[in-house]
Amino acid sequence: MDEFVARYGPWALIAGASEGIGAAFARALAQRGVHLALVARRGERLEALEREIAGLAPVQVRRIALDLARADAATRLEREASDLDVGLVVYNAALAPAGAFLEIPLDEQLAAIDVNVRGPLAMAHRFGERLAARGSGGIVLLSSLTAFQGSPFVTTYGATKSFLLSLSEGLWYELAPRGVDVLCVLAGATRTPNYLRQRAEGGAPGELEPEQVAREALAKLGRAPSMIPGRFNRFASQLLRRVLPRRAAIRLMGAQTRRMSLD
Ligand SMILES: NC(=O)c1ccc[n+]([C@@H]2O[C@H](COP(=O)([O-])OP(=O)(O)OC[C@H]3O[C@@H](n4cnc5c(N)ncnc54)[C@H](OP(=O)(O)O)[C@@H]3O)[C@@H](O)[C@H]2O)c1
Image (tube, rainbow, N blue to C red; front, top):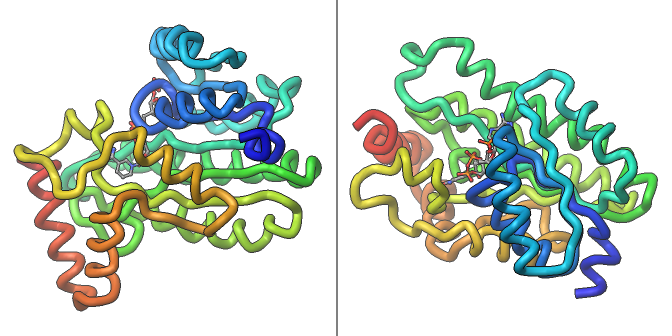
């Protein structure tokens, strides 16, 4: 436990922390004794989480209400956290426009690029520099199983998640000699409030709780460039990537996402 705090503490910054997987990271890190800088748009959700965390562990919490779609989000976060010794950055927030590509307004798809691509890239750059200067730390980027092949009806979202996989793995190699561990988390269906709002009737096979995603991810930090939480998801991903022809994998994904996004 102390080894974890020594390497990735004393503070962690979680971008997209107010609910779901981000909040699960917050709880798991608090239980390991890491202080938390929590970022999301809804300040009242962050306040509620802070109260919950106070009952879990004696750690400090700083709430930062900010829209990560802003072009200057990373600069602002760097400023807000300038007095904190941040050892770990988790970029969790995402925007997932769902539906037929041509019917989703372009502005919405470009907003997904801001939150899912520009945001984590800028954060990895700004905080990567700080962590490398410290000579220790970690960066966790939340991607998805949609990263591995085209994902119809969440096409732009899936493309942003492929970007994150590639970004993370490149950084994993570049930053390791500077003492910074980078990990891409390729989550499958996870019972977050956001997912439960869009989920197809009956759900998806292999659904996980957010706590399991955070727990497995933190256990892999420093041990792999990327990881898939959940045994079923690891199996399904092997099938999609290594067994099925690519066209079949895209069709299978399309059949699943059509049920989820358009029904
Ligand atoms: N849930 C799944 O089934 C699933 C599957 C695969 C991958 N993932 C990935 O896992 C991550 C988390 O997913 P999730 O389902 O927990 O929900 P999410 O809706 O992607 O993220 C929720 C958190 O991010 C914050 N957030 C969203 N947009 C923001 C913005 N523009 N600025 C600041 N904060 C923002 C939300 O708080 P506010 O609304 O208060 O801002 C909330 O705390 C995402 O990267 C997602 O792609 C999830």
